[in-house]
Length: 184
Image (cartoon, rainbow, N blue to C red; front, top):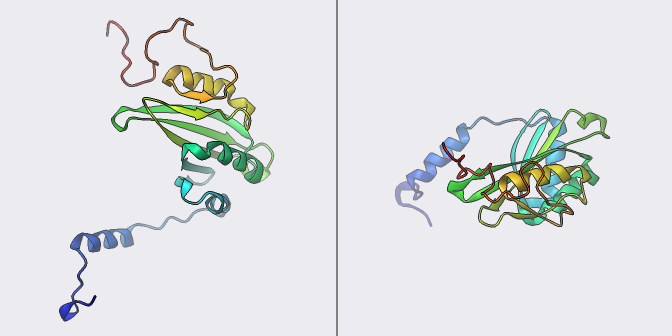
């Protein structure tokens, strides 16, 4: 539809958004990281989202239903074969617990000093995700700690038991934001 007098019929807010986007500095992704990102985008499309990249660091946010497939692809096709850590963060306002895997590489020389992270968001009232032990054996204790401290259930984990807390711990997980130390 054309407008009278050649004026645009788009809303002013769209123009402001477009101008703001045009003024955003373009970030050039280093070639090593770009190669990895392109392979992941081609394989997973909109099931994953690049959160950030900088030299020797990449992070993707992924959907929980692709976590095992994503980890296998990362290990088998890209070469990130060494789990460094599994961490979690509680976001009660968003009703989400985020689980973050940090993976390194021991076998591909150009990736040896790189760290690849991928994060998935789980509902806070029912935080369940498949274990990644079949892909990365070394996550066993990290997942146990995340289970214990945040209450995340890693389905299929062969020994999802307390690691640091007393066996009879009956309070909420201590790294949840609504946990409080008695007497404080």
